[in-house]
Image (cartoon, rainbow, N blue to C red; front, side, top):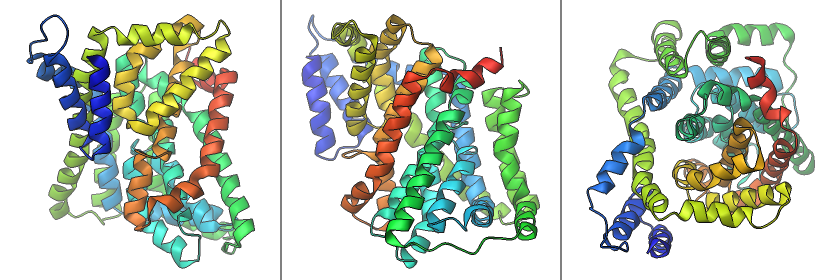
Length: 426
């Protein structure tokens, strides 16, 4: 019956049903017709509530609210201006500015979709006006936005830490080096593409001009710094950091930049609430499906099957990576994480991998899935913002996708890339 539920789930997605409702429908049918007389259907709402009844998840709506207030309060525009002054002289200046802005935004919102929407709205039209190839601006924004879930604060990391009972703070720190590795490669790809296609660069900003732009943007630039420093030195817990950055974004928008009006607060809270509802609904919807898989012992079967493929640890780890990339092509990261972790966590323990390193391997795998069809949520977000078909975006995203796989291979092969920073805290 569980196989029928999985097939039904995939079919419902392919015919266009929302992924959350597809999971709930498939799980409920699986429960009703489960061998042994079925399951009391009340288990469905109970497992949905259980999926989001975690104190640590309070950080998610707070980070989403901070991102919304930041976008409306003039922070995003100042970050773009600062990035232009710092890297606008590089080849393909607008693509480099987009990536640099995403880097700073990643340290504030923790949401890839929020970053793609905010920066894409400002940068995609500008890149199109300068003659960038069709689909390329959207590909750059999608790849830059992927930094959000890799760098702290990260909503997927919070969810993973709750599910795997790991330290959220150590997981945040583990993402910093891989995040900068991704950024460095993406910027190199943008420079290479600019050379190939003759994309323009801006005159190099003078140091006095850079200092002026930095002073004007300092309140925005301080947000990710305060979060990381506060978490790194134990001044803030993850939830406190989320609350702090939300209040900080509110005060900066209202009192410092004065672009956020009191009358706009209602719509800002409403927009943040809608985004939060989508995230938490996906988490809740994955609950019944995850319960059904666990109850049917599918997770143990999958783990045993993967471990039996080879006695070589690297072969097993490669199999896990391929499996997750395939899952990421079908499912969005959060439900995929909830559904697959029961099967994959025992494999990491069996291979003797550090739980933090293994977490980063799994997270980067699933985040890379946001760049691949058919689900590829970042492809659809940037496609909607840029009003460009998916096809050209997929073509242009291929070099970035390849570099993401290279970074994934490196963090698999070299544990210090993910364990050095968390280890500094003792």
